[in-house]
Length: 106
Image (cartoon, rainbow, N blue to C red; front, top):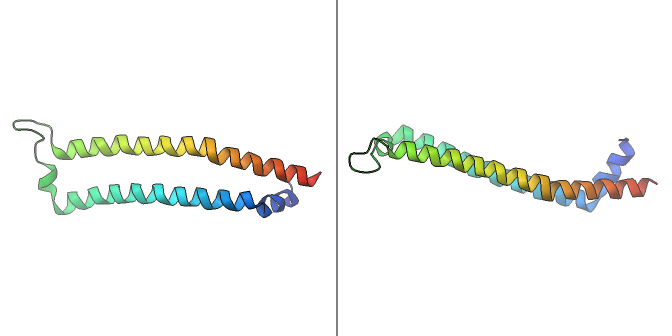
């Protein structure tokens, strides 16, 4: 693509909307991930005994294992949510921006 095409795309109000929505979404997902991950690390550092408690009386399964399994599944779900939204909403908006910039160039 030419630099003129890029300029038309950047000047499109939909481009600004895309940047704003995608940025807000990415920061939200990042914040959720960081809070969960570093929250777990802080619990490991300052309250490790809480994670070592068995889930039930006589169980070999501990709270820490369950929490880590939950986090593993949760992070996969967050990834799936991001992929669905990126491939749907963000890609369709990108295609609209490209189509409009190509029309303006003709």
